[in-house]
Image 1 (cartoon, rainbow, N blue to C red):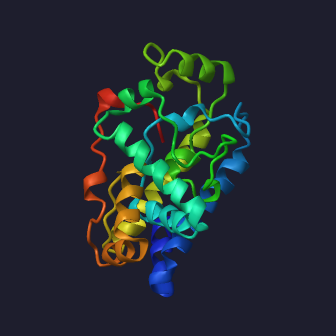
Image 2 (cartoon, rainbow, N blue to C red):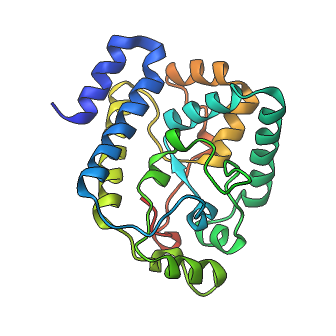
Image 3 (cartoon, rainbow, N blue to C red):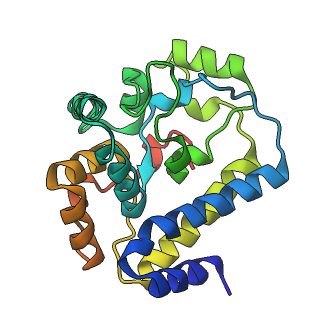
Length: 226
């Protein structure tokens, strides 16, 4: 059985509460494959150069991350919520290259430059790695002349994320759920504004609640993400 079919089948057995379980199962399988390849990467904790790009995610991944934000203690939740709104104001309407030049950090980055939702990061982040820290540094310091697509990346790592992202897309489509790629920041703003419960209920009815955040890829604007 294909992985996407297996994910959809597990969702049908678990019902509504199975959405985060299905997403995490897809993520875990990608992580397992990436670990099995054991490609060398220059990435280390606190290295956040790649966390200044547009990130694509499925609606299911956005909902899982939004639920995690909503579950934070009020002071922390308010701070994270404000960071999402600020980032959207700065980046809305910009294409991927303009986003890279802007160097706007992901609102999910902590003050220690670590991802605050690392376990639930979407495939757009999960498959992104570099084989050369100097290349990342040069690109980040000269964003107008060096695109992130020039950074050498472990190909098997990228492909593992791409394959499992496609499997999750297949599962969502089989379930009759919107399976478009969405801008993570814009998607989070929509879900948090609606309320996670409301957004999730509408999504599970097949409504494209994140339609305004849908990404329409252009080959000329690609930054080389998963």
